[in-house]
Image 1: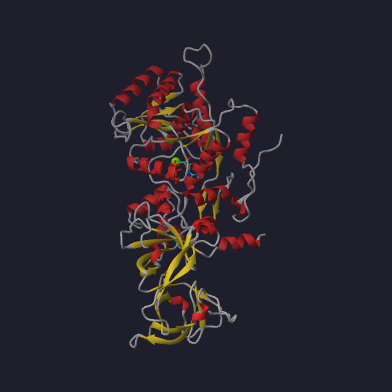
Image 2: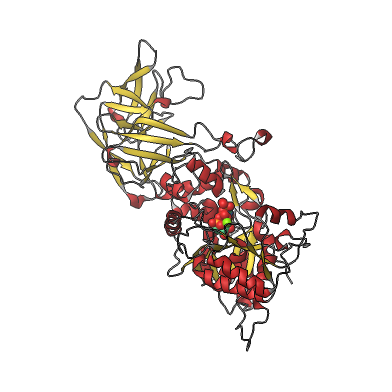
Length: 587
Ligand code: ATP
Ligand code: MG
């Protein structure tokens, strides 16, 4: 039999071009369909815990689960794995649904909550007690972990392990009724305290927690542990391919044990009923990105500690942060497609994500001119009151996006960086005595420089233009080495532009010298706000969420903070595509 192996893709060395062939999970699904393993069904799910906002790692799992269902004519559920009332909130339930939809996926009428299965789970726990496969234990949490042993030392049996089924049934029922305080008792699976796999050493199935749940309110004061609940949820929903991340590989024997324990004695004609569905779990490597922290716990710390401005801060890898920054969902889906899935952990270069964003925006974003750090230019020989409407191309990649008019007049702004009084060798842009082209406009020549007498800072340039070069070509074939973007000072709109850099200065933010705080790797310059910047008037009434390419500068999106008359732009990405170069070099 052919061995099912991982495809070689961007996961393996972070750089190779993607193989669009079947990944190892899709290979399994294809084979299961061929052998009719699940009666032709493909049923997946995305099972977030509503204890935070989704991040781009979740997007990988979402695209995988919904993508496989779509590709193979199956179905994918959205299921909230809400077994821990203390960390979970309705706000997260809402945001997660919004994010999955925004990414372009649809669970139709299959929105489920693990908490809706609590009664069924309880009944199954009762069955396990009756089969002497579970017992009520009075050890406290610290004692339980002491008894557990280590990887090299086997654990010790709990002194409560041999309670009778009748005694356990009584205690478990009273746990449910609320007779005991938090932590006073647990229900544990009776497996093997000497098992090599620590997960199999009589794991806790239920704990007592007098806490209000976002869905079930105060109905329950015992809550199922994740390991007990998760496989049952998949079973109840008839999940065929239970796809999860690698850290759950060692939990799979336990999930199998639970289902087998429930199924013992079940079958045709059995008073207990038919066997329950036994899903197949498949593990894949979680997404990690350079310059990014992905754990929900850390993201929560950044938000609660106000290191960033909320869950949708454009510097965060949350879906809401990426959305606010202006990243299109199509680019995230393409990214998830390109990284593929593999069975070994690795870190993906964040430049691949940026490459996917540029790739999409290059084809779709309208080009406009904006000057971020303005320097005034006065064209001395241009008639004072005159305004010309020049034709500008909206997107050179897509002629159907048409053209627009851009006003030109005597006083303009150009980018401060595009002028040097004393230009170094490789600097071809504007300098005293030098001629350059203004995009869609004219050739201009710098004649003189005005400076602030106190600081010596250049405050304005006086130039002349050549009327024969309208549109940007010279009739005599004269060449210039640079084309600059510009805006007309009296027509331009004043805006704020927010430039973002990586939130962390270290490629691996979790790495700190001598175990220091990971937050010491935060980049102090991750946000730079430019006020005023100037943008051409065609953009004056752009709606939040609109995306543009500022010519020669980067891709930008109108931020939610914008109000009428006060536009705020977020930089989505710069234009420089380092990833494309790496790819090209590797041929
Ligand atoms: P975190 O580890 O970041 O706190 P989590 O795994 O606890 O996240 P869940 O809400 O349980 O978060 O995740 C829902 C689903 O998303 C799970 O199936 C999980 O495997 C998957 N997932 C979470 N993080 C990643 C990631 N970085 N890459 C791929 N899948 C992920
Ligand atoms: Mg989890």
